[in-house]
Image (cartoon, rainbow over all chains, first blue to last red; front, side, top):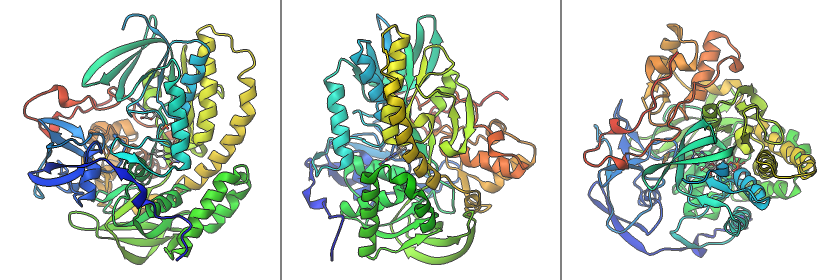
Length: 100
Length: 473
Ligand SMILES: Cc1cc2nc3c(=O)[nH]c(=O)nc-3n(C[C@H](O)[C@@H](O)[C@H](O)COP(=O)(O)OP(=O)(O)OC[C@H]3O[C@@H](n4cnc5c(N)ncnc54)[C@H](O)[C@@H]3O)c2cc1C
Ligand code: FES
């Protein structure tokens, strides 16, 4: 089929894969990418539960404003859309309600 | 910091970076602050460190050119730095910035605000499900990570961004399940005269659309996603036909997908301007509420200049030129001679704005779109408040966004109201029979950005996220 917009996904070179964990599950992502993009690639979209009604939430604005992607790393809450991934990072959900 | 800077520029997008470059070229001591690591702003956001190489695009080459100019200049560029407070001081203006987990103060004689825009997303049932991201947000994801938002994505929204996002998803190896846009083909034909001013961009847009058609991606004109379904994440969406004022008429189709991009135009990010004390007015053709700013970027606050999409959504090309104008005005304020340099830019600014404003006109939601929210639809994501709960508060007397905020905490969550206040203001206006221009956004309060809890070691609870204090009524 004719494509006016070529698929260029094979011509992108990425940094080596490293392992990290999300709520204990081992996931791999490219060193230096945002934690949330590594999680998205692994199919992990549900990052936390809304505090008021426990409904599942994930990254939304992708630019550091909405705070929907906040996760806990080393006891601190960080925006996973802005947090670079490093080897062995232990990432936890901030709130775990009925879906956790 | 010891000696105050001549000029502090907030924002390193096309507007802020060009303001900083002009002022620095004229010999001003300039500091430029941005929460992104690299210059480029939203439109030319840099790729993450995890992408070692990738094919060039018009966005990456424009961004690289700008980043090179900044690195070759004398500008002190503070990346990964968030401005959270702005105050007038005897020397000029003081900014509180968070950098490396600490708060620092920067003082400058003049301040250039180039804060850009954020997107408006009309609340619909299911829009809080994981897998739903903003349409402009999707460009941000794809620019930094060079990956599509999912395997099979429904791309929905107004204006040109919907076709750009769909095309980028295909370029990065994803599948577009459907393109859904409230605009009609006639809306686009009506925009052709203004688009002819930018044949390069018009041609690009035509390639995006033709590629989608060749790939037999369904394009739903004058439709909207009216419901997103799924348990833990998106599994399908419903698409509804819209009337001429974008009122949803009937559901026509269900499409399976694992991701959805939703967006209905951009709104100027004016909290920093409000905090500095600039007056705001309602200008729907510019994207909503805008600060009062002259075409050369000057304002009626001494030493404060503003430029780019934060002053009205005119697009990246206009932002570049407006940035130059504001940089020259700020330099002039600090005593530099600028001669006739500003005069040469006005005609170019007007031409670039005319294209950008035509795109904004296509993007701005029409009144019927808000009917996509049902009584149970969550309007305030942070506090999970439904339309019904808000209506109840409004009917009980809350007649302003400030009143809704203090009554229900809507707009007081971690996002500071950035993703609910426009929809809440529209709800107040329609319930009370007011014009949108009679319901201003709530009073801006520091912090402009959440102050990171990384300073607080030990147990963390969600409630520790710094939450702006309620505005006094
Ligand atoms: C998410 C998003 C994606 C977009 N993508 C496109 C696109 O692909 N193509 C297109 O034509 N237009 C796009 N736009 C429209 C955009 O507004 C452009 O027209 C252009 O980027 C505007 O330039 P600017 O310099 O005025 O603002 P921006 O480019 O938005 O730059 C503003 C900068 O200010 C910084 N900033 C704001 N507040 C603070 C703070 N408190 N502390 C620190 N830094 C701060 C931001 O990080 C940002 O880098 C997008 C808009 C958004 C919101
Ligand atoms: S996705 Fe909105 S802050 Fe990260």
